[in-house]
Image (cartoon, rainbow, N blue to C red; front, top):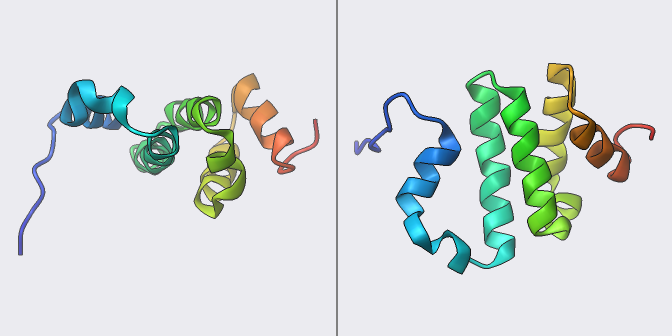
Length: 102
């Protein structure tokens, strides 16, 4: 069984950006947003709901349709909200998606 190399002691977004390097801006907006949605789960697994929420807000700024249509994004946003004390940006995003009242 092959194991993936792991970054030691770094955050998921910094590891992924280091792996992608300067090519991040070359990826289509939808791919960047989808990647950030995946990163959200990593932040939640590490116990950092604030960073998870910021990843979702950033993904929404890059490609709003990815956040608003993908079930994984709605699930991740619900998990961020349940983790408690979401930022104003996260609360606004949740209200836009109809997950909370404005």
